[in-house]
Image 1 (cartoon, rainbow, N blue to C red):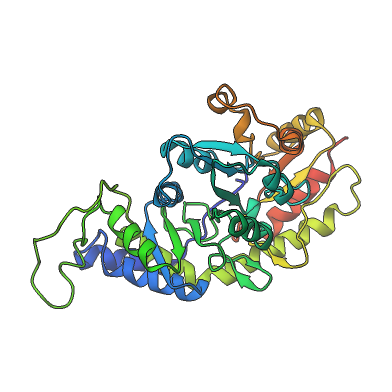
Image 2: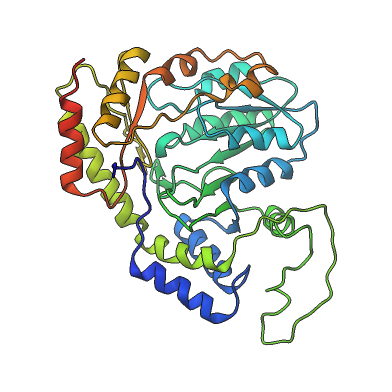
Length: 375
C-alpha cells in the first residue's frame, strides 16, 4: 500500500464523541454544532463562527452576502482549488484572475492593485498550503477602494499572521474541515466574522432562509416551536452534530497536530538542503504556517513528471496543487487572464506526503527515495 499525500488523524476520542452523539438522538444541526462554533470562535479570537457543510458553502455564502450582480468583478487567485472560483460564478459575477507571489504562491497585492476596476466588488485570497496571504496589504487595498476582502483559509486552520490567528483578520474568513484538512469534521466548513448582521444572515441562509433553525426552536427546556418565517431564498448547507463532535476533539488537538506537521517540514527541509535541483517551500518570518501542504519545486515540467513517476514507482503518492483555475477549460474559454507566475510555476510543483500520523520510518523512506532520484 502506498504512502498517501494526506491522511486524517483520528483517535478513539473522536470515535467516542461520534458515538455519544449517535446515542443522544440529536444528529443534525443542534447543541454540538453550537458548542463547536463557540469553541472555534474563541480559539480564533473572533465574535462569530457559523458552522457549514463545506468550505465551498462558506465561500458561496460569503460571495452571496455582498450582493454580487452579473456585471460585478471579483479579484481572485488562480492558484486554488476550483471551489474558490466557482463560488464567484455561482453568484453570477466575473472572476478576475490576479497573479501570485513566486515564493509563497499567495496573491500578489501589486498585481491585485493593477487589476482593480470600477466594477470590482471583492478580493478573494487563498492561504496557499497554509501560508497566510499578505493580509495587511490586501486589507489596505480593500478599504481604500471600498471592497470586501474574503479570506479562503481552507489550508490555514491554526496559522498565524503577524501573531494574529487566521480567522480574526479579514472581515470574512472561510474554513474547510474536509476529511484531510488540518482540522477535520469528516466534512464541513465555517465562516468567521465579527459583524452582527453577517452572523444572523449566514445562520438563516444556511438553513433555507428560515428565521430559526430546529434546535433554536427546541432548546431552552421548552417544547418544540413549529412557527417560523422564511425571510430569504436560502440554502441547505449547515453543519451537523456528528461533524461538530469530531471537530470539537480535533480543535483540542489542533496545536499538537500542526506541531507534528512542522516537525515533518523541518526534517524534510534539513534532508533536502543539499539537493540543488529541489527547492523547498518558504515561510516568511512574520507568519506561522499551518503546513497543510509541503510543496517542492523541480527545475521544469519534464523533470517534475519524471520525479512524480519515480515517487509513484516507489509507493509514494505525489500530488500537484494546483493546475491554476484560469487554465481549466471552463474558465479559459470565458475569460482572458494574464497570470505569468501562476501559469509557469505550477509546472514545477510537487506535493509530498505530510500528515500528523506519518511515521518516522515513512518520512525517512520518503527522503531516501527522493535523494535517489537521478536528475
